[in-house]
Image (cartoon, rainbow over all chains, first blue to last red; front, side, top):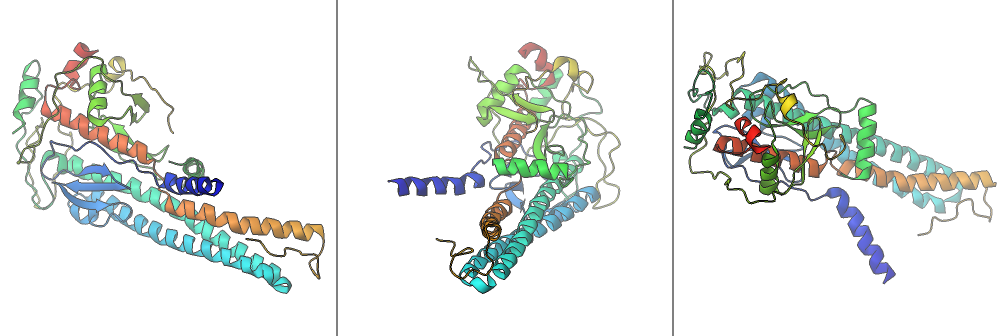
Length: 190
Length: 227
């Protein structure tokens, strides 16, 4: 019984940090080239219902936003940091697991300190790489959100896209005042 | 996000490891998910838009979240006590044609969007900064953000000898066991709060849908009536 509870508790500890929060709302009124975000184990950007890029790699984002220099620059950084984060994570985990192998040296009494020293050093390097991967993930996400915002501001939210850079005409030079506002907003649902 | 994540975020922020965004959203009335550099989390910028009590209730109804992370803190989303007649807009087969106010945007250099000195306005009668401060006071409901180890120094024939040596070996073993746990956690856990990111994205998508659909309680003109 106790063993069963322990197993359940361990499974919970393993699952909890991974989390399971995802977006629930599906946007309905999306402009032609607009990049829309959702969250499903990471940030996911899509346009017209097609996935464009997903964290952490953010592959494809740079190409999609290429016509907006600021967005392209951030997308490139997002992809670079994302790639680095993945590589550092893999190295960090590998070295950390390898460091645990040094515990077998405890049976080798004459060389015990060499084993332990090696394990400590390997573990410390692994930990450092993992900490760096955390930083890179953070950078990748920040750059990606900025890329999406710069792109949507200049192109996407205005109904254009880099592939087909044609903007719909403006509704007017100035925003209407009075009850016209709600009427004109309804008109845009076409 | 796990408690470990919070500690690491704090450490990262203190050591200058977090990403600092230079993006400033234009005041055009379109909500966005923006990067909050101080907390290294996704937050919502309303870009001059407003949040009436009814609007917050509608957001709660559409997204099922109980709060949204704004740039200056969390805002709670109350459940509406009375049914509201507003219907969430539904997408058709055609993409939504955005309605914006300003000059027509003309592409001069093919393949390059023109520079827009004045961002087009998406929301008529947008409450600009300075005006919004007096009318919008979000009830900030939360904080900002935010087997055997073998024979260690064993008695028989141990050349290391001494209690200090044993203690040191035990500390080394503990470190060797603990470091991988921390390391694997750091490498596998995402730095962002998944819950907060989902709340921010859902709120932005629902808010923009309501504004684009028209007749929603989130329009600046409805603020006075709804509150």
